Image (cartoon, rainbow, N blue to C red; front, side, top):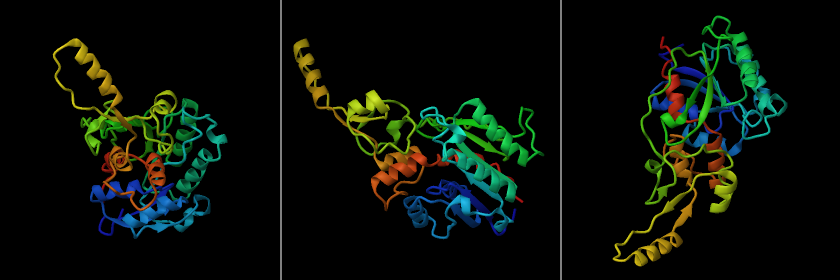
Length: 302
């Protein structure tokens, strides 16, 4: 790597460029940052925050031979086909099959370092990914079935969100992060109270819905609620009446885009400039920045 000039990064499925946020937070100098992304709203947010980003468009149109001196390839390939919450079509799902485009480019470039993020999945799917990646870096060995196997990290260690993700990388010495103790109420904008200590995993569909019945019965998305002030009463009847009135006065709401930014450990208002629907989508599709920092900080400097 060329520390004096900064790193040259190729980010595949870059989204809103969480990797650039992590590199900036780590004070790692970047010489060139190439982004492969097709979502126009995510690209708008990226260019607003990192105007020097070189947008490449669709991953299918990228030739590794055009990028001979990349130091790090990073990507979070579409996960819908692998997720336990979906139909688990795996590589038969055209979105998740884009993983093989990631593999193709990784093989063509073979940078010193790479990082791939994806959801928890069946072991058989996980093994396919491990085998494909390990074949590109046969010099890597961890004593397991494959030379490179993923590490499971829950974002809850570094954020207020339960978000289990698998990370494949050849960056050395990656360990579990220490739990810093953040809870959901720490990220709220107002005097509302969270209905749990850690939020459920924010997804790209969080913008949907809006009533408590839908949230509890179907999507199990988190709500926050306002608890009215509790008065002091003299008789059990007064207390009972007050409790009923208090329940009727409860105000429920879903999380705001800013609160979702905080769950993903993205700086406040980073995603401003597009609709709330698009903000929720890109945050749900994004990576938890503090987890990416935790991994990238172990890259050797030369």
